[in-house]
Every structure is written in C-alpha cells, then in structure tokens.
Length: 440
Image 1 (tube, rainbow, N blue to C red):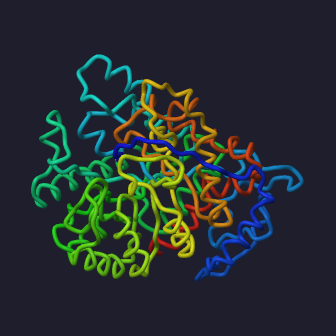
Image 2: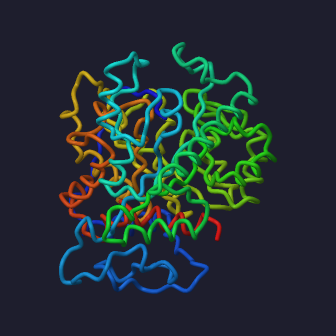
Image 3: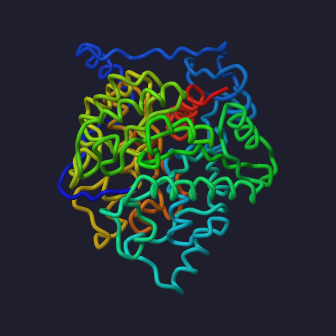
C-alpha cells in the first residue's frame, strides 16, 4: 500500500553494463563485499537457457524454473524464462473493501465500477486472474493488509481497526479470502512450501494454457493483526510466509509517516519469526527499524515494494530505501522489489501530469540504480504494489494492467542489460530468495 510523495530528484545511471566491474571495485574498496550464496542442496549449472556461466539452480527444481532447451547461441526471449514473479499485490483488501471480483479481468472490473459509487483515490483496477495468466505472472506475494482507523477514510471506516482484536479479525477475513479464492479456481494455488513452489513452476512448463497456475505467497503488511508476538505461530500455521512489521506505525515498529524504531515487542516479534523461519519484509519500516532488522534478524530479508530514495523526493523519505540500506540488504542476499508507481519514480508527479510523463524506461532506470550501487542485478526484482491505493492511470506509460509487466524487460535492454539480467530481475532473484525462505 502507498503513502504520499512530492519533490524533485532524478537518477544518474550508466548506460552500459560494462561499467559494472568498475563500480563493483569501487564498492569493494569502500568495504562492501558481495555475499556468496550458499545452497543447502547440490547445485547444478543451468544448461537449458542462455544464462551466464555463474547461473545455477538447485538440482531438484532446475528443470521447472527454466524453459525447454533453447539454442544457446541466441538471446533468450521473454518466454524462455516462463513466468514473472511480482512480490507485492494488494488483492484481498480490494476484494473485500471495494468488492472487486478478481476472477474477472481488470477491464471487466473497471466497467463494473463505472456503474457504482466507488471511494475516491483507488484508480482503475490493474489486476485480475485473466491478466495474471495472460501476463504469465506465476508467483505473487499476495498481501494481508488492514488499515488503522487513524489513517482510513470515512467511506471505509467499517474496514479499519482501532484495536488489535479488530485488526486480527479483519486479517482473518483476508486470509480466508485467499484460501477460498484458491479453492474456487483451479489455476490458483497457495504457496506454503518448496513443494508448492515446485508445482507452480512446473505448471508453466506445460504447453496448454489451462495447465498454468498462479501461486500466492501470503505476505502480512503491517503486523498489528498479530496480537502478541507468540501469535505469529498461528499465522504461520495458516500459511503466512512473509511479515512486514510496519505500514504506518504498529505495535511493533514505526512506519511510513510515523517513524520510529522497532519496539520491544517488535524485537520479540522478530525472534518468533526467526523461530518459525518466516521471511522479514523491511518495506515501510523507518530508517531506525531497517537498521535494527538488518542487524538482528538471522533469517531471509527482503523489501517487497521499495524504491531507491535517490530517484525521487517523497513526502515521507523513509518510505524509500537509502543507499546504505540497499547495500546492506544486498550483502544479506536480500532482494528489493521496485515499484512501478509514478509518484515513486518522478518527483512531484500527479495524475494531472498524465502517464506519458513517466515512461516504463523510468522503472528500468530505478532497477539500474540498484544494480550499479550493489555491483550486479542480483538483488532487484519487481514489487508492483498494484491496486495498492493507485490504479492504471498512475503507472508508467504504456503499462495498463499487471499483464504488461513484461515490458520492463525490453526497457532494461535499452540500458545495455542482457537476457540473463532480464531473467534475474523479472523472475530469478525472487525465486532464489523464495527457495531459501520457504520451508521444505
């Protein structure tokens, strides 16, 4: 979910990937050492796609994550890496708060909403099962998001919380929605473990579109539904695999617009999360909380939907990641989901400026910024935050729905990135993280 921004800023980036070794040397001279990923299982080099020599998959799932054999003398195409991973979509909140039926297409939802009164500010729908399948969005981190009454609108007051019991109940409704949606749609599956991840990946190897499956990894955005740290175990048992302690401030941490460190309960929450082997999402934490999380959390870390702070000036600067935190997260082999939201990509942008003011190349530039800073593109992916308080009129031109995320790939090519880099950003980096973070 989004918080506001205004101001001025721009990216300065190198156009050619050949500049990366020099940048990597500069970072290493400054003390930033690249982390070598250690896998617990035997690794095999992938010989089924045209990735660089250092590209590996775990032996048990290499065939599922790569496409059928291709001519290694040719560049990979979009289809050669089969599906995209989107690390942040606000599905359940929209379904329950706005009545959006995500079994319909985004365009059908838009047509339905023109015929009824809708709360202002949510924009035109960008999500829908037909778009996930058409755009080959194979894995989605699907959020449980509940809004505190102090931040909510009068139109949606019944769906905001004033107590943690209320937050718990609202979150339970959203979790039930995901399980019901998966039960009712054969092409949707809740991803709880490595076996589920394997099954979803394998489905995209099938030639028949009807065999393809969209996997939901459940992410709790804002931890107030967890009434005490020990209750984390309950949510893990119910299928939650990623927790972001903050949205705005919560019992556990300061957040967007309400900064502050992890609280004592927040530190305890991270202890229980580590015991449950859950992944920690640092998006929305303020700088103090990010630094604490990077210092003390022993498990898998990510920023599901956070842009570099340097690329645009925000109303709440800590909603974006500082260079220091980007580099520290990369040292932990974390991944950052770049958000294709115009207000996070161009300072002072408003809907009145129009989509054309922010081309999709701006997303590629944000990805490039992280890649140049960390010395590789191994720590950046996509976290669209689609339908998270903004709509199609607020995403880069010419993107219209989630089915268009693949257009980020050609935009990367114009900056000198190759097929392996494109695969890493749109799929591989998140898969590497999920392989490490999900239970067996």
